Amino acid sequence: MALSGKELFFDSDVVIVSKTDLKGRITYANKTFADLAGVSPKEAVGQPHNFVRHPDMPRCIFKLLWEGLSSGAEVFAYVVNRSVKGDHYWVFAHVTPSKDKEGKIVGYHSNRRVPDRNILEKKIIPLYKKLLDVENSTSSKKDGLEASFAKLYGAIEASGKEYNHFITSIGEANV
Image 1: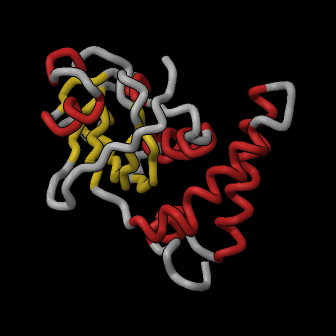
Image 2 (image 1 turned 180 degrees about the vertical axis):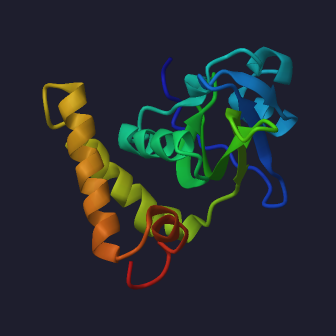
């Protein structure tokens, strides 16, 4: 699918919600998710969640997300998604594991809000561009992913913070 270059926006009082099974297939999508993705909520159900993945999104962010979630942790992340028409939209995601009565992870729940535009433009977009450059600098996708993951973790370690604190405080002057 060709990218349109058109950015979509949603109101700051709106929350995008989706739920997935353990393999990332959508089991629930609210109307806002569906509208931005360019499908109906019913059409979204059963799709792999990555059908909205934008090619400018560093894969190392998803590696970090899946590692955190599979260990039972909540994860925050800035994400650029795309619609089926090739438009894109930015979100600040809070993803949590869903557990059954015994505490076993049975799926994932994601709430996304409008991200701070200043943080996106000054911190996230430049960081993601650097991570993508690293990912694309090798002939092996696996090596590129590992190299960008190492670069991301280097930035996190240099901040002296855990990942979620790093990402939620990235707008602070010293990050």
